[in-house]
Every structure is written in structure tokens, then in C-alpha cells.
Image (cartoon, rainbow, N blue to C red):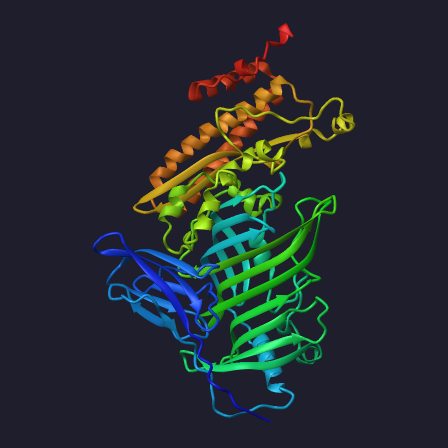
Length: 583
């Protein structure tokens, strides 16, 4: 069977505007369109040639690069299209055209049953990509209901990557806004986890299957493969674009479109789509809620490092019906993009021990200070708020942002987190002990003594290089996930906890002074942090032994005096703790 391929030229143009900051530097703002159908093109890679720093065009095809040197070159890159280099200072037109790679037109002999396509897909699965790397990574997500935007999430991570898969995403910094709807909120609390749970070649329980998971015989039985297009890339390799349609659209297999380098049996790009997926990674916020009608579209692109393909971008879109306890449905559509933009460097991650239950994105954000300077100065990669609508949503006083997270009781009538982390302040904390009226009060009194209480107060340490300065952040944090108290809480116990918290704050201040001497030596920071944790634990053990939950009043008074001398806080007076003989 003979097929002839015709050239289809699809032009992409960018409407670009410039605004001058100074005589030397300018800003570049534009929108990326497909000139054939006038649709915007998201996630075009745009970066400065001088330092490789740049951005992606966003969900609406918009991009913004600020403070560009007129002598620099801008590089525009998108898989399947000719790379363009544009001189910033000499550019005067208002359109840019990116030509697609020309489709090969010579006659090609194709087997009637397309057997070579199945062999090509299988060869990709067998050609294991072994490169492991850590990269600076950016993630952005937007979610919408029927009539309004519901959330906007932006975060920076250290991503751990192996071949075609993401092994982990560890947060550096993030921010969000969510908009209440009928005194409820919809939040994608673990979107980063949902993205990295997807594995391309290994089967897993969270996503539908795809042809790269299957051996040749099972692939032939499950999928119908068709050749969509062929072209040559910048290296002269022939790229095959193959469409894989499930023979049975039962919600168990992705429809797949793959860009395969036939010379090296490597993936350049893949798109996976499905409606009514039987398997998906989403769980409702509350146990009496459900999630129905899940549709997914996942597009991954890969870059070549050390001879191996590894993740460059992930476009992760989904829609679903969120059903509450009354059976009311809220249709949701979300779109997320991830970019692994720097494999030669990675972030210094905050030092803090997160437990498994507290490790989702929103709980980690709760730990972060209001750090606007981080967002102003982190210019390695930014998807700027080019959309006025997006920027307005992030700054809208009616939305709940990162800093309002702990005050949602005033907005929603309840706390977003039942047991939030608590940073030290002069405000006092209270033990939520066992009520004597509780049915399990007497049961818990029989718990072995060593397991009846513990208060875990950790140090949080972070370091950021921002603009021309170094930012050092330290905090003393009460961890509700590892703390417990199986006693009835009286005044002396409240004093006991608050003195402990204050003692840890004193140690935190000592640690901060020591860390200031480390400069940019990250090993020094980690060593002093570990030493401070050891010292704090020893102090805590001695304090616990001396005061016995506050029942040893004389010892409690001695430790209270230590706190008063350092912090000018008198916990015994604040809680009106009377001497035992006057009780």
C-alpha cells in the first residue's frame, strides 16, 4: 500500500507588544496563535539566549518577559515547529511566524496492517530511559465552576525525574487563592501528587492504561494504530506522529497520540485523553462526598539530556462532577501546567519534618510566611500574571489566599484544617485535652504512661537568594500531627505547654543567630539545624522530667522564670495559676 504525504504549513503568530522600562531594557508581552484556526497556542517555550531564563506561554497563549536587554536574543521553541531566534532590540514588527516542521512528502511503503507502528511503540517501551535528575520546577493550576473561577495555584518545587516519569515534587514555595461558593470551597490540595503519580510505561492503579504499558500482542488486541504525520527534527531524525485509538472505549484505556523519534526509539511528546475514566487519582475532601464523570487530558513533552529523554513539561487537564452529601453536583474543570526548567541547579528546600498526613500542597503552604519578595525576585522562570483576570483573582479580597487559610472560620463557618500548624507568637496556645465527660476518658487513663502525651515543636528553616540579598527564615512550629495529650487539661497543663513552646522559641532565636554566620554555606546551615534539633530535644526531655506536666509547681516556676527573663512572658500569671495550697 502506498501513501503520499502532502505538506501542511500551520503558521503560528505572536502578537507582541513592547513597553520601555529604560533606555537599555524593555518588556515583551504577547499572545501565541495558530494562524490556521486562530486558536491560541499554550506552553510555547520562550527564553533568553544569554542565560536560558524564560517562560512558557500560558493557558491563553499569553506570555510576558520583563527587563530584557536589547542586545539579547529570544528563542521560541515548540515540538514539531522550527525554532526561531529573534533579536530583542531590532524587532519592530507586531507578528512572529513559527513554521511547523515540513511533513515528509516522499513515497513511503507502509504495511497494510501497520505492523511497524506497533513495533515502533513497543521499541520505545523497551528502550529504557535511565537518566535521573533533579530540576527546578514550576507548577500552575486553575479551576473553574459553571459560573466562576474557583482556584488559582502557583508553586515552585524541586522535581525528581527518571526518564519519562516524575518520581517526586518537593515544594519550595507556593501561593494560591480559592473562591468560596455557597460557603464551601473547592481546592486541589494535592495536585502535585496527582501529576507525579502518573507513570507512562509502568502500570498503576491511579490512571487508565496506555499502549506503552502493553506488550505487542496485547497492544494489537486493545489498540488501533494509525500514522498521523512524519517530519524531520533539528537533528535530522525522522519523527513519527502515531494515533492510538482504543478498540473498546470502556473508560479503561487512554486515547494516545505519540511523537516518536524513530532513529533512537525515544518519545518527544505524548498526549493522553479519556472521558469517564474508571481509574483516576482524585479523592473528595470529605468522606461523604463523591467524584463522578472524570475526564483527563495529559500532555507530556521531553528533552534530551545525557542521551536520555526526560520530562520538560506536563499539561494536566481534567474535568469532573463533585457531589456533596446532599447529592448536589458541582461541575469542575481544571487545567495545570508543570515545567522542569533547570536541571543544572535546584532549590534549597525548607528544613522541616513533614509527616505523611501533613504533606499535601496546601498544608505545606500553611508553613510558609507571606513572602512577596520571593515572587518578585525569583526570575529563573515565571509564568507572569499576563491575564488581568488571573491577577485580579489572585488579589481579590473576597478570595481565600495563603495568608487567610487559618482564618477561614469567619468566611466558611469552619476551619479548613482541623488541626493546623501553629507558629510561635505571643498569643497563647491551648491543649485540647480529654473531657471528663468523654466516653473514652477513663479508657485513655489506662494508656501506658510513656504513650499518654507528647508535644512536638519543630524548627522551620529556609534560605532564599532574592535579587541582591539573602533571606533567612526561621520559625518555631507546633506540630499537631505528631503531638497528643491523653489527659484532662487543667490550668497547670496549659502553662506547661506554653512554657515549652516559649523555650523552643528561645532556642530558635539562638539558632537564627548561628545560621547568620553560615553565609551561603548550605552544609553549614543543615549541620547547625541538626545540632539545634538535638539540643532542643535534650532540653525538652529535661523539662518534661522536671515539671511532670506542670504538676511539679516549684520546677514549673523555675522554668517560667527562664522564659520571663528571655521573652518577658509570665505564663503562670497569664493563666492565673494559683499556688496548690490555695486551691
